[in-house]
Image (cartoon, rainbow, N blue to C red; front, side, top):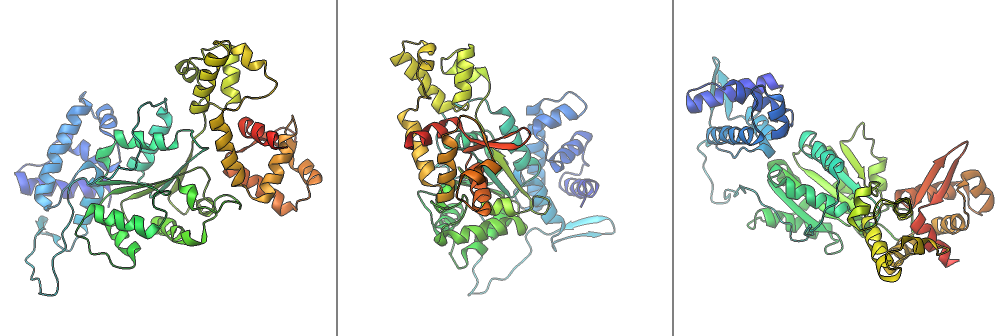
Length: 445
């Protein structure tokens, strides 16, 4: 179905319901909704200098008319899906150009078949999501998520980056700003509930407490994802990966997550699964983005002076060097700023008088966790790289280390997928550890 056919269908629905055809503004709103535009984008594109709030109000009036006509709730989040489903329904037909629609056909219910209650209205469970108290500027990343979630309706998204960089905060901030985009938003944290079956049971009963759980649960879940526009968030996804092996490989007891991620991209539905992880998922990397509708947002540190001013470091050259040394990490920069104030009386130069990069206890704890999750080849590579002041080429690493070419390549790739390795392209590609991780690993020797 194209936008012209959708406009014709909606025009007939509105005429049947109100006796009037769509006006020009309503037609523009329908086209904007079909193209996945926000109310602000519509206000900018539609001739007539309408405000964002006015476009939103007029859209909601149209949703009310369509909901009454179809006997099914229509809103911005499910607009395209609900109308397409109505068009393809056996209950709608065109007779001599007239629209016939029977939203509530007479049905007989046998004694052995009870009608299934259909959940209506928003139904969110964000009890395990963090409360956002401060939020650093991530305007570009928020816009990217909006484009993927609202315009492209991507079914599988990952937000990845090192611990503490702000992945969870970013996703929760987006949700706080866009609650109306989904019928159901449910946030689950893997450390609290690693079993996928338990998570699915919680999701189903959250949406409808009267749900009769039957196996396979995945079948019930995908029925829900078809019926309602859901956003399911799985935080700390790295906890289902095996420590001590290459990044992103599932634990034996977590193989059902592999099935979930595959099916979420293959089965037709109107929902999104968003995973937050400190490691890139090997499975998602193996899926061809040309064939599978998936997206990955890599979250890095900040490179603006606004963060430096926010933590009290100012904009001096020394402060900019601190920003680089600590990779623009908001938590680490705040800790270093506090350290400078309490130990060095606010004198940044005293920090640089130390002969090595200062790691706070929090940094050491997190780097220890990272190192302990590495496979033996990764640990060997990391220990060797930490001893060099300069980046080392792959050829030199192969000559220096007793690793096979396969182990070396896979080890370097895995370190990159954990965001612990940087590469520099000159005449040859050379590798180095991220500054904080490098300092920690060097201390182990």
